[in-house]
Amino acid sequence: MLDRLQDTPPDALLALIAQFAADEREQKIDLGVGVYRTDDGDTPVFEAVKAAEQRLLDEQDSKSYLGPEGDRGFVHALMPIIFGADASMGGRIDGLQTPGGTGAVRLAIALAERAGVTRVHVGTPSWPNHIPIIEDVGLKAVTFSHASEDGSADLESLLDVIRQGKAGDAVLIHACCHNPTGIDYTPEQWEALADALADSPVLPIIDSAYQGLGEGMEEDAGGLRSVLAKVPYALIAYSCDKNFGLYRDRVGAFYIKVDEPAQMSAAMANAAALARANWSMPPDHGGAAVRIILRDEELREQWLAELDGMRKRLRWVRSHLAGADKKVDSVPLAHLEEQNGLFAMLPLDKAQIVRLREDHAVYMAGSGRINIAGLTKGNIDTFIAALADVAG
Ligand code: PMP
Image (cartoon, rainbow, N blue to C red; front, side):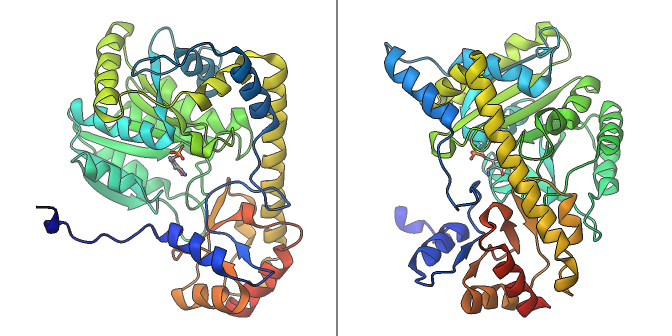
């Protein structure tokens, strides 16, 4: 029976990690893996997380099951951060904890399917796991173009999808720090998007995996909030894995916005049933640490300050790359300064990406996506020179 399984390609980025590790050149640069790095090239545990984990160790008195919703304190403490002061919109938003943002995306697609969605529109390129999740749930993924040639968002393509969409359609939108392009909608574009969604049967599914790493905590949530203010229904997938540095602890949340508070209990019951069928309940540790941080003023300030430092560093890398625009003829770098988050796409062909790796020990995804956090004061000029060599 199992001999019927066809081979399936391994994750290309994981293969790149192994190749990078085996490279013995001292000046090697890793722009592949999607984690934040400090100027020393490290991905440390946040100080605020360390302190919260210590408290958890001292105070946690049971590890008994919590149920498919996970830690409700965590889910609710996060809501004002995402949705603002009127976080539950009068009982119209609620949610549950998930294993990372991936679990939240999975739950969003599965709940959409239960509610009658058959097609999910996705702007491409997108996070490489979006389409596999949609198809694994049994829905059809339909693509439209996310980015224009000039490095801005292709809003018209998205508006067309929304205007022409029918009942049974959903659209997946990145809240901020678009992965892999770094190209986000401007506040004006978000307003246009919110107006179009308000007049359309298309269900918005908003994926927020990098709040705080773009322009600021509030700014990065602005688009999502303008949509939620206007649409009757929406699903929101949220990850704490980047903005709390909790990656392997798998910390995420899934939220539902309904039109009337009376609709919430059925929506949540279905989400909980799906969670139970998928993973029963989420891992607790990271979510509990986030709850401790968010409920403690001092730890919360410390976390925000650490996140601020990360954001400032990412902005520095972006502006330094933009400043080198004239040094690399065929790869425009100036617009990187306006884009957000960990990622950017460089228009390099396969041969150039191979040359960067073989001649210069610069590792990046085959798509041309770079994790700009892999660049530091110590290696950024080496990278720019390498880029000029292969694409100058
Ligand atoms: N959505 C997007 C757009 C992402 O880039 C990622 C992860 N890199 C996720 C969701 C999933 O995040 P997590 O690691 O928390 O599962």
